[in-house]
Length: 378
Ligand SMILES: Cc1ncc(COP(=O)(O)O)c(C=O)c1O
Image 1 (cartoon, rainbow, N blue to C red):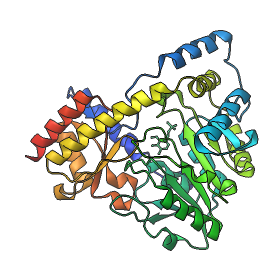
Image 2: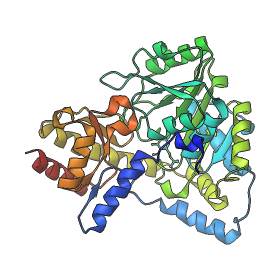
Image 3: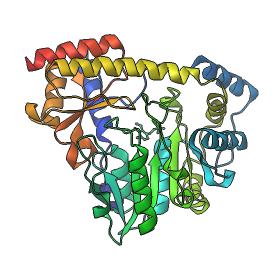
Image 4: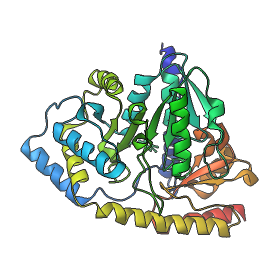
């Protein structure tokens, strides 16, 4: 009885693992959840406080579908200041999470029969959105540092979109300017659009984040997506945004107006507070992530794994081919050590030998996990 369109996709693999881990936890086991893509910090107090004020003020009604003008303006200013992107208000769309922006942007651009290029590995949702649009994913290999490898070879006359994500989920890789310039050159030469998912922009360790939309000749072919979930620990609030050429934004807006209508009214007000207030808490959270990354990577290497320090996000993508590959090792960790991680195969065909470990967990839990991993492989 279900539509053929929806039969093309499966429920998110990351959510499926979370469900299994929750089942094991319900049996009374102490499961260490290193599978989640969400900061374990509380949403900053001043953001919560301003939301309570917003509710008291009565910001509880429908808003314009594209977002309240004050938030759209704050986003335009943020793009200008942080990303050197100059976008007008009719190019911006406020969405119910960056995931909603990714979904709508892909539906706005791709037709049946088109090709979209994804770097292998990539975050799980892109491929599902491409399939839902009736298009095909062309997986482009990456090198041992998860940087694009011969991307140009994947381009056909059907290629309409390249999707990039730096800092990256699941690898933690941050693309240098050189790689982004190569992608920009390919996009211009072949008249292809680029979707740049920059949600981990602020969670970066000593490297510089570049927005490909700010590069020469790219303004009219880039969709830039960002959100509040990761930088401000606001995953449950569901607030994200995109900036795109005005026709793409208009197309996505049609979909938004007939589905969620708009992001939640008082949550949009919280977004203004997040963007316009002191940003030092973002740096505090990032320094803590950095310390946890160092503990995790150091611990894994002392257990005999070969693990480089990722430059951004809060994931380690670990090669476990020695232990039967990602699917088998993730299952073993869950069943024997009660540690939930995500098998790399969820992120593309090239991820089969890997697991993704999220270090958005306390230092104590990371130390515990390292001990349990050591016991499991001993
Ligand atoms: C690469 C990437 N993009 C987008 C999202 C979605 O974020 P949001 O919570 O804003 O929908 C995630 C969340 O895991 C992500 O990892």
